[in-house]
Image (cartoon, rainbow, N blue to C red; front, side, top):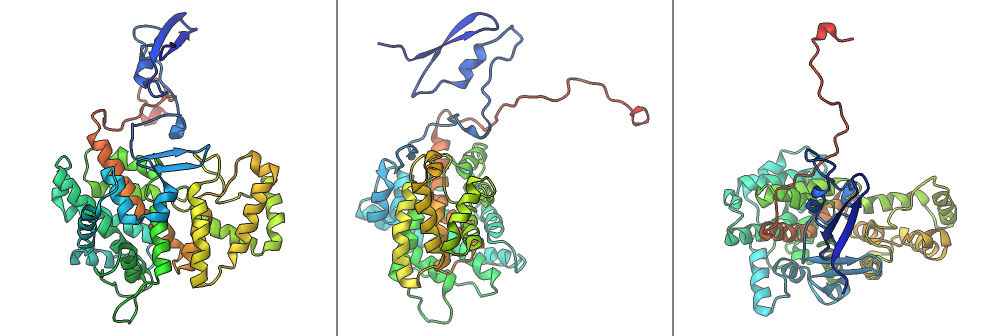
Length: 429
């Protein structure tokens, strides 16, 4: 039987090393023994962007990018989206198993009764300019919550962790809705505990003068499915930020604020907005072939296609495409959908795109649905952040309970000046 080791020969010295292989990986610290001399620091790996470096062991989410597979705790995303609810999925991600009726009832009750914000938080939000970006408001307000719940610093107490987890899942939609109402000059709408998680969010977003807001069931369900699809996605940029900042043992509000900051970036949370800009630029189905020729010529980019992880069809994109038709039956068909469908048809048929594995990803259709539901593009990353809060918290707690966790502190390759002496300013050329 072959040994689970990797044999390495250092051609600089002629020495051989045998490095253990576990779960298809080697320990970076095992490379430190490979030296040219006693005072040599040892070999390091260099991997900008962590393209082939595992920073942790995890049991939460699994992606097989070649086969288009996404699992939450072993459950296919397609099954959860078809049969589950967002809060049921949130329980699964955080607790590791699907809840029974009693567990789910208690979980939903606790989330529902944490949705209110302290009035001082509302006053804090009122201090933002009328045109403040909702993501900037979300980032700041979530971070400010740590000052309202000082017990959150006791991160090693399981009961305290659970309270903060429930508070964050409950309050982030309230903050998000307040951000939206603030930017359009409307009064904030308080939570309605009679509604579902997504129904209540729609209420806080769109309620006007009616005594009782009644969300459309199709739209309510569509938003719930979108939240399930966005709940977690392995070690992405914002999850990495959550784990990295959380490794310093800060409270979860500060760590979530850091994750929101990562999501704020257009390369992470702004991709579906970029898709809408592209579709609007194309303008009509008849202009799609010319646009695709420009893509092949390298003159422009095809947004919403391809993914860092997936090398086949993003399973979330298939679910959203089906959901889009149901939403448009209620809201009216988005004129941009025909352009999107033609782009997809060409991308799935022409060799140029097939060879590069440019399949639609989750961002390609989600922006169309959000636009149809009446959300402005500035709210798109906020809508991403609401469900992803669950994934961030699951990643954070797993990191805290991992005995191998150390404070994040990557190495660097120093290419600057060697030691040199200070020169008085009068003698500098």
